[in-house]
Amino acid sequence: MADRITLAEHLASQRPPIAPPLAGGVAVLLGRLASVAAVIERELAHAALRDRLGYAGETNLTGDKVRKLDVWGHEVVLAALRKSGVCAAVVSEEAAEPVEIAEGHGPRGLVVCIDPVDGSSNLDVNGTVGTIFALYASEGRTPAGPAALGPVARQLAAGYVMYGPACSLVYTAGAGAHGFTLDRDRGEFFLTHPAMQVPKRGRAYGVNEGNLHSWHPGQRAFVEHLRTPDKGAGRPYSLRYSGAMVADVHRTLLDGGIFMYPADLTDPAKPKPKLRLLYEVAPIAMIAEQAGGRASTGGGRVLDLSATEYHQRAAILVGSADDVALAEDFYRR
Ligand code: FDP
Image (tube, rainbow, N blue to C red):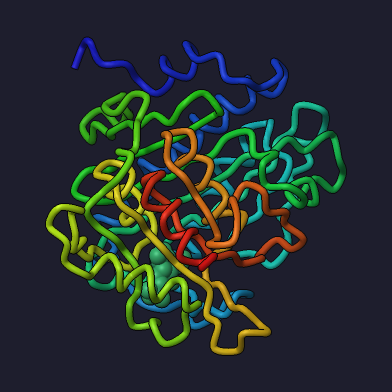
């Protein structure tokens, strides 16, 4: 382990394309988010023993039934970010409006968009869950939260944590995507997947096929294509779907292939995507692109989207560049 690079050392050695006063703050917040991830990972391991599983009895703004660990995760993340001195506001899945933090206001301030516990329907069955986040410059605004609205390509950094058999953290600050693994004994993340590269093409797809009836015809035709045997072309693809975005995306980035959450087009005039743009879709898109992959809504690049609401939803097809490009092709036909 002595020769392994810690997350702190890695952050100090990187030269991300971020202006100096903000770059320091990004490193501070990534460090804070890593520390809080180690706390969340410990809590998840003991949640059943501490009566922390199950519902809290409320529904959040986006209509999900809130679980006890969603509430706890939100509070623990907020506490960690409040103390950072550079976090000006937090846009969280568990709060209707951004939480403003006066100590972080000013030109160095950053806005954190975060889903503290993503995939929480997996919690009660001891399945994998994650944390997803994106960082934006607050541009010295007060209140700072609105700085997260606008083109999502303004993200300075993005990352996710996957609480699986091992706890993985992947981040990008615009200079590649890098993966770390938590050493549970030392409570520290070490670099295990430097400069991640998504294979150009994969052999697996991940999507909730129970929703097939509601998809765009191009989405249906694409999945049908992946399922149709053609040995020479490497088909059929295998289906892999865990129901937690972080786990499905992590596998896709490492092994190649495509993860999709297309919009529900039951009413074609009113497309209904499920995943949230600011703290699910956009950060994952930035990480995928930084790893040489591609992220699309089916109709265009995710990173060309603009957020007009904090809890806005967007479709996503993400993974190997060739697989995503082919999916887009099916949408166009
Ligand atoms: P969950 O509802 O359990 O929080 O955030 C939404 C999310 O999980 C993603 O993590 C996951 O990919 C997706 O929803 C799963 O949705 P379905 O149950 O509709 O497949």
